[in-house]
Amino acid sequence: MTAADSSVSTSPACGDCVLNNASNLRKLGVDPAGGDDFVAAVAGNPNTGKSTVFNALTGLRRHVGNWSGKTVDRAEGSFEYRRRRYKLVDLPGTYSLLSTSHDEDVARDFLLFGRPDVTVVVVDATRLERNLNLVLQILQITDRVVCALNLVDEAERNGLAVDSRHLARELGVPVVPMVARRGTGMTDLLEVVEQVTSGAIANGGRRVRHRDERLEQAVGRLAEQLEREFPGVANTRWIALRLLEADSRIERAVTDGTLRELSAAALAASSGGTTP
Ligand SMILES: Nc1nc2c(ncn2[C@@H]2O[C@H](COP(=O)(O)OP(=O)(O)OP(=O)(O)O)[C@@H](O)[C@H]2O)c(=O)[nH]1
Ligand SMILES: [Mg+2]
Image 1 (tube, protein in one colour):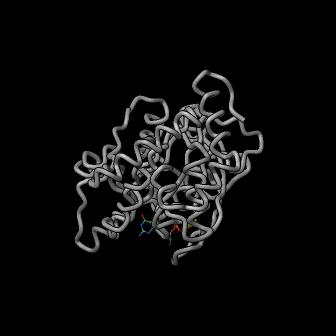
Image 2: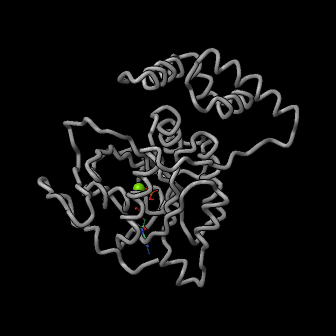
Image 3: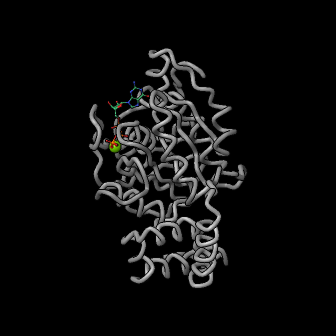
């Protein structure tokens, strides 16, 4: 990994950001005009540097601080990279995708129902084991994932060196070492985000299979029913598992039309139509 990446400016928000030729990055802040080509979500455990990444790419000043739980709702901003426009969504920190608090619901609902084209999972290199739990859960619902291995400076200070290539092989998704506070790794992150959204990288995200054969069968049967009922919804196995656990938010999504809408949007997108 290189020293501080000088090609990405960490300048504060500005209304008239100029094109940064060196990095092909244009920070668009809050862009009411919209018209984004892709939606990218920033997810991860609390206090891993998600809002730092969000601010560096959008030029916005989302609150960043040295304690966890600062971000309790999602925020949206935009940027352009290599002439493609992205809406970036900064999500609250969450330890899991099992619904236990408002913050976690906000993050989970967006990942499940917001249909992001790519999810950047920001992980803390000093607490990898705990952080990977969420990465593996997110990989159950989407394989369009990029793992931003952040706080590498802290890890180094603690004598830890993470083999990011090995980690990428194990997870089946790209891993980008970063020191987001200094802007290090930001260009690499943008490059892989572009490759994942354009389909240049076909991810083979690691999926967990259940050892219990009866559970596998039950999940499989229910997932098939969900696929018939809601064609195009990508993460039916994960939804099936949550239904078997009597997860009330997911039960509601089945009955209140959320999954129906998701299905219609997915079908419209796959036939080249526009989605609402
Ligand atoms: N040393 C170091 N500190 C960092 C790095 N990235 C972010 N930070 C710091 O980590 C703290 C948390 O950063 P945030 O961006 O607010 O983290 P967050 O993931 O948005 O936090 P929540 O919204 O509470 O989940 C801040 O003090 C940042 O300046 C990094 O790469 N290295
Ligand atoms: Mg935050």
